[in-house]
Image (tube, rainbow, N blue to C red; front, top):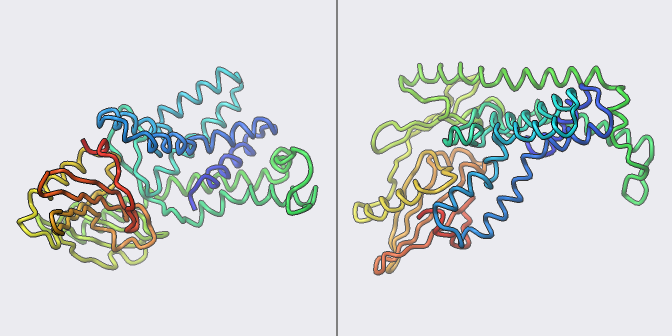
Length: 352
């Protein structure tokens, strides 16, 4: 599972292979998880968004949103320059760079859209070649942490449910007792992360040949190890959704209507909802499906992703934007729901 612990484990692998001392290992471990500290900034932005104008909110989102600026190569480069100026240690700087860049790349190569080249490129993209629950990445990243914990127990034991002893958490890494295994694991991890994007490119090419239609690299996301969910706009009224794998090629396919149950009387509200959504960040619904209905003096427009029903266990595709328009005043309330839950309105600063 690609999460903060996975990044920490890869950082520990890098530090071990580099032969760093205990203090330097802590620095590299911190570099490996540093980008994920942007959740603090994201929480602050969420707390103050209603007080910001639309333009200010968008600008702040690029800087404070989760997996935004702190997951960019620009931020990573600034941090590495700081490490070099502070430490003047070439090996530590290289290891720190490898740790923080591995974090950015590992997130980018999984399913989350990011802006790694911000501020030079503001379009959100993803490589999307490795599943979030990829077993190879998960096992490799957890190995050093398991050995560290096991060594801690062996050396000091456990008392009252907690580990006792001093600060020698990284003795297993600094002693070099597993250095050969760690080098092998790091090589496997690197090859795996570089191989999968190439393998995906060949699979997408084969699917395009079978479909006779351009799908595009960005139009396919991993939904389980070795299996992908692809989508493209088939015509003006429908998307085509495909599931495929390395072993079987295209396994399932279906068409999804863009306007499944929206009558023409709702067209002005659907158009307005589309405009509001297009002006918002992060723009996480790639293949918009519009559903509208009336209730009393209100018209509700729901924007969801055409892939939602096909990605049962993946939160990324479960996002819905809900706009409730008052037909008398023209005013509206907006909700962002994930997995069908949208309890409170979100700030209009997100949209205008």
